[in-house]
Image (cartoon, rainbow, N blue to C red; front, side, top):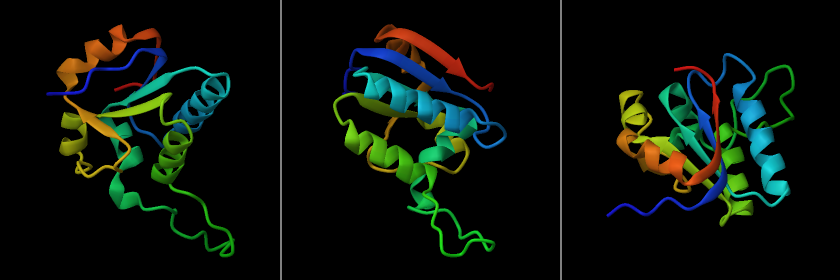
Length: 135
């Protein structure tokens, strides 16, 4: 039996390709700012945004040959650390169908996969909902 969706102040819906615009950066900054203010936040990713938390990403991006001494965290690591810093106030969900369709079924353990037909439960559990990106 699936876990009930916790009540949250905000639901951020991330749809579409994650790296074509500043969508990911904006969403992560908004989530961090909301958490800093004490809000409870859930994030639902759908479409290509489900790849943000793929287990295959590891902890770091490939090295930048122009700056070999610097390591940049992967989005999966950034999300994992954000969830670990706010375990009772940040919930990250991935549309199971979208993830499987894109070969991203293996996700980091902190992320929960959900079927798309329960999306309405997530909307109902949030006081406010914001759609970011396009499908």
